[in-house]
Image (tube, rainbow, N blue to C red):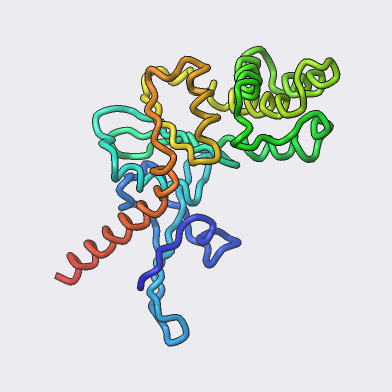
Length: 255
């Protein structure tokens, strides 16, 4: 049974480092770099290792495979779209006529983790858990999103501390406020992209938060929200499409 690998497996700390594919990048996966490993007696499986993608100022390994999987289920021709993939390092991917033409990385999740666990703010918050997204938590989250438009992020972060000192929010609500603040700064960047349709691709763990952010910032009218169960399977769908394309290419070559 063949095995298809993407993401950090093709990085300098993975199985073998592969050069990044360059933009523009077709979302059918035809521009990806790949390395093939034949099966052996010790490991009786063919392995296909997939490269990441780079621009002049950014890189990714793994998210391009998710985009290929999502593209297989959507018509990406005829209009500009920005695919939003939340995560530790969120990606905003700019697609035009079935090609990825640019992308941006936002360290939203990692900054939240640093602030929540390794800064003065760690004693001012409790961590978010999905079942805790009640009316009070949602209100605090939206307050953080609205606060994201009021000034510099370095100053805004300290309001998490003063929320606790002045008893404005309890610790759980304050954790939601911090999350809203950081996600708000990330999503607010899209308010300047007025011509593109937004496609939110949040998995189960972040789906509610990013959907609420898009609604709070008034972007719902030009956004499509992909169900989380589809997003959670996007990488697998991308692997299948890449494998099928490879087999088609090999068959044509043999003919």
